[in-house]
Image 1 (cartoon, rainbow, N blue to C red):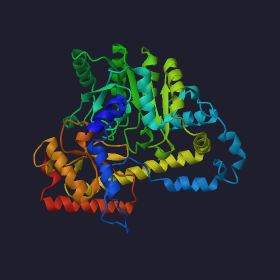
Image 2: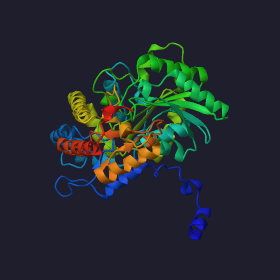
Image 3: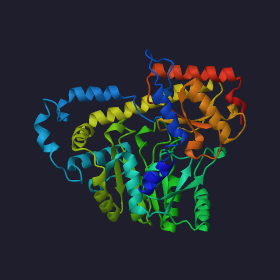
Image 4: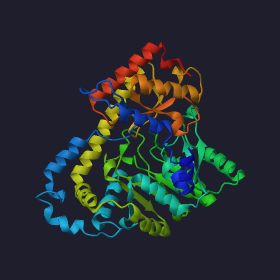
Length: 444
């Protein structure tokens, strides 16, 4: 302990603080999976990873395209003639053709209702890097952003850890489907002001992580109006925009501001990524799209600390420029996500477990295990979660790690496994619920 204290004295505050968030149950569940990974034949009693929002349902389509387009890679016989051109130094603006391809893809995902300027596309190392970079551009240490809760647990890391920015939750409740309202945002804003907290903006995840729901046009318009009246920023994290598999359709903030006449475009910023919509988290492609010229310039300078490799840009330019492939992929992905979501939630309904109604997007659903709690407390939620991880051997994420107000909710990821593994997961859940002698339809 004494040696540890001496070491801390010569290290930075970032190196020695505990603000990263790795002590959250959200990450503890991942550790349990890493220690005892499920495998259908080699370790059938292992832990199933249902805490990772990853889209693996359409890799067959991507693999087929790669085989048919070997020149897309500089590491093949067909594409090697481009190796030198791509391997040498690239400006941190990124490949021009890549920015154009990303802009067109973002437009297609939004049904071509909006247009994006390739010169406003700023790259970053995944959505994690993009979110942190936008915080550095918009806020100083001690400033705060309003974030509707429940919210993505790693926002504590992405938004706060190195920037010193605070998160002020905007409370949402199950009684109205965790719907965000301007009135709720006003309450959180007022409380922050009363506590002498300088609020610099509002962050939305649309579609929502962990709820799997989308915002309607009127709500988005009211929130754009709110930030304009307060002269604060609106950051819309839209990394799940192509995962909307049923109505209502996805509405981007870019579409909203096209319809408004009196607003300050400099306050609007979009975070995007190819990690969820295409299933490429390992490629670390994050995008900042800002309507503010100064933010674009600053973010581009900062992007040199987390660029996307030119090899990745080159490959994705070819993939995203193939309109027939993109159209087919987006259509098929929605169909497969819809079927998987339906099959999983219906399987849970058979043993009385309900999920949040109105979920139509994302790679997860919000499961209500409140009736299985010994008491309606977060201590009881974590006790139940420990049983699910250690005994049932399912890594699902407890609602407390998403900063929710009500115990008993869990996020369940459904798109990172094959159909056979889904059946294993459902069977484990059925057995657990029946052995506990309770049914989720008993109510809270």
